[in-house]
Length: 410
Image (cartoon, rainbow, N blue to C red):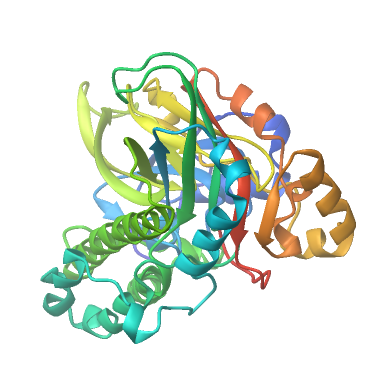
C-alpha cells in the first residue's frame, strides 16, 4: 500500500449538529470518511442518514482532490423556489388548473423523459464539454430527452403558500404571503452515469485502498481523470439548473403566471472554497474542495431552501457562515426510516390521514415518501439555529412526486 492510500489510524475530529437525531451507522460512515488521507476537515448535519460511502448530510473538505461518491450519484441535486405576486388562495379558487399544470407539464421517474415533440431547448445542450470529453458524448441524447423532468425517490414539484417573515432587500420582496412553486430534482441520468463512471475510475486508481472505503476513492485534481470529472460535474450542475428552470417555466406558463423572485441552490456538489487552515498547517487560509452530499451551502449571507416532507413545511434560510460547519446546513428533514421500512410500516390510510389533516392534495407519490418516514423538520431546523437564519416558510398544498416508490438516493 502506498502512503497515498494509507488511511489514518483514527478519524479526524469533526463537529456534529443534532447528534440526537443521527443513527450510529451514519456516524460510523462519517468516522470512516474522516480517516481518508486527503480529507482535512468535516462536519455532519442534523438530517444525516446512511448513504453510499458517505452519509447524506456529510460535508468533507479535501486537499486538491475530488471524491465522486462524496458528491453523490445525483450530481447537483438542487432546490428551486419561484415566488409569484399573487395570494395562494388562487389554489383554492382554481384547483383544477393548478393540478393540470403539474400533471401535464412535469415528468417523473428513473429513465423517464419527454417525447420528441415536447423536448426542451436550452443553451446547456450547446456546452462544448459534451464534445470535449469522450464519455460525455454518449450522454447528450439522454440530456436532451430528460431536460425538464424530475427523478424518482424524494424529488417533487409542488404548489404552495410561501410566507416571507419580514421585508427582505436581498430577495426584493415585502413581508407577506405569496403563491409559490417549489421543486427538488437533479441532473437525472446524466449525473448518475457520470458518478458511476468516475467512481469506477477512482477505485481503479486506488486498488489498495481499504475495502471499507473503496467507494470514497478520490481523483487528484492534478490528474487528467480529476480534471475530466470536474468538468463533467460542472456540466451536470448547469444541466440540473436548466432542468429546474424549464420545469418552472412550463408549469408557470400553463397557469398564466410569471414569478417575481426565485431562489435556488445545489446540495450534492463539490466547490473550491477557502477555509482557515486546520491544525498542522501554516496560519491563514487555504483552498480546499468542499463536498456537500445532501447539505446546503450556508456561507454568510447565502440563501438556501431546506424542504420538509410532502406534508410538512420547507424553509427559506440565510447562512451565517460557520466555519466549523464548513459553511453548510442540512438539505432537508432527513429520513427517520429506510424506504423499505416505510413501505412495511406505514399504511396508505395513515399517510392519507396525515395529508388530509394538513390540507395537502397529493397527485402521486410512493408510500416510501410518506411524511411519517421523515424526521421532524422543525426539530432539524432548531438543531442548526447557529448555522442559519430562517427568513421564510413554504407550506406545500398540491404535490406531485414519482408514484413508483423507486429506490433512489437523496
